[in-house]
Length: 298
Ligand SMILES: [Zn+2]
Image (tube, rainbow, N blue to C red; front, top):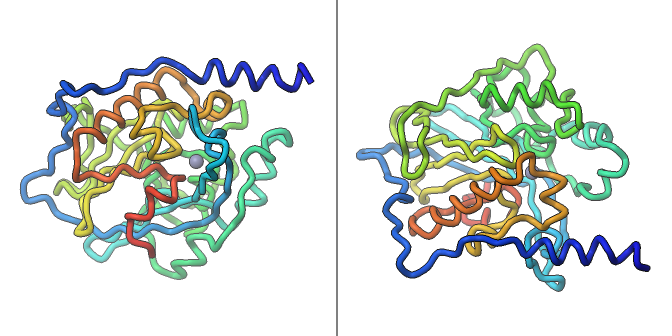
């Protein structure tokens, strides 16, 4: 019994980590993400490729034991000037096969229920390029499902994936010769609190920023659409409740999934401040269904 309860007690004690709470004299000015003058829009649709249900206490610090968190595996279809792009692919055609490459002890923790893959949902719609929030299994599983395609990511993320020895990434899902890798260069142009940013199309419709920690090369995407402004933040957080209340992932979960604890904390803190400062911006963690519901469904 003792052996069983010790990790639980340690988790509960250590999970109450210190964090800065925003007070009433908080100045939102530095955290505002400006809309470029005459910014263009693009269209975004959300697709679900799988799900799993777990107790909220396993998802975030101080999560409730009696609340079930619906974890969705999202991908996003962007359309601009009649060209289609993806941000993440979610679970792909070979997801189950790829998943079996994880060590046996890890599989029960991260298992999922598949739904239709993005390829099965969009059919032969041509995909111009795929942007990734990061290259973890559940986001890049479908990288090879669309034939020859360009992949946009940071070089550091690509190299971390290639040099990974801890089975954090599933390399076989991205090793096809027909993939063309394009390494994004975030420019020395500040955007709100971000020191670097990339206005990908040059018209303010898609702004890319760095959100290090979960993986060091993790990216966030600020999208300007006719339905509103969305900030896709990948797995920097798992739920919008972490952003609202500036909380980390569950202690054990973050040990298992976040590459750099300190950088992840900084990213959560930053997202909390951005959320406080931009009433018109919808912050969307990849896996939180309730946050994703505001993105139009494919
Ligand atoms: Zn994920």
